[in-house]
Length: 47
Image (cartoon, rainbow, N blue to C red; front, side, top):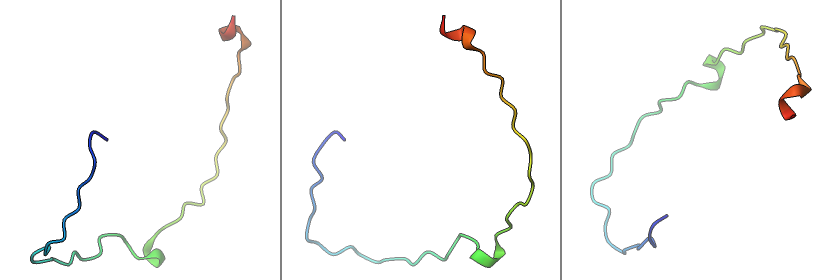
């Protein structure tokens, strides 16, 4: 950070409530897909 944060004791003004934008937990869909991940290790890259 480039500078120190300076807090002031002053009114915030009119506040606005933001509605929820994330889905409810029961609306989330979890994937049951299982797959394989293959990785080839080559020790030649270290030389």
